Length: 247
Image 1: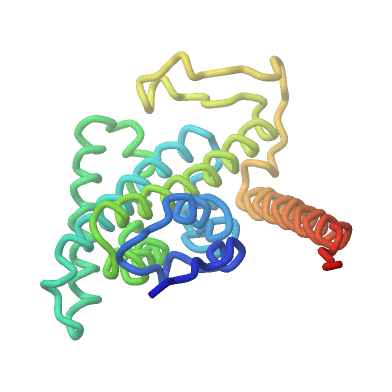
Image 2: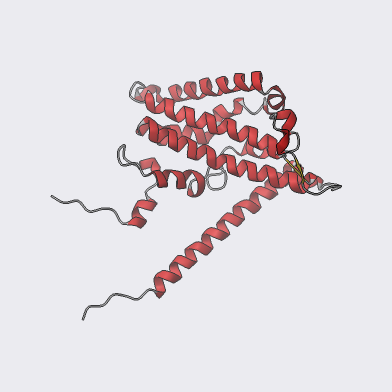
């Protein structure tokens, strides 16, 4: 008895949400979290903290790391106890797990990074209601083993982190001419602080809420443009490739 492998394009289109418990493709998980399933640029989830906190790169980095740890640990715990939670109590159990993880991170941040917590404190508890975390717990972690679930959570969180950090860096750069200003006070990393444009008078709109929507829209448009260009290139290559003929 023989089995045939799926074509490469079919495997790439198989989103990890429906992946089997065995034979997890690491590349697909990373690609889904960082690019084609990115919660910030593609699914547009968690926009409340993403837009509100991304006025500086330091704030964006702090919230992004908190979200990365939250979704990674949540996925791992949910996958570990997935056989213990019945179908009727699955969602409440997931919410309790997410709340416990986020509360632990909030207490740790309050103890070790009090200055950063003073800035982000309102938005840390909101991670509990982030649809991306619940979505990955339900769609992937509850159906797969702990290590693939941990990897999926890490990829999802990393995808959210890079979007949040890029958004915060762009807004801070255009708004103040600096990068990672306040890193010494908030993160105890003074070497991160950079003044890109000395004497820059600032562009106020960039650090206001409308600027967050504008910059995020430009990032989404840029990603869509690059994806469309890549698809056209693949189509042209496929059309130009010679068709095999038999004598």
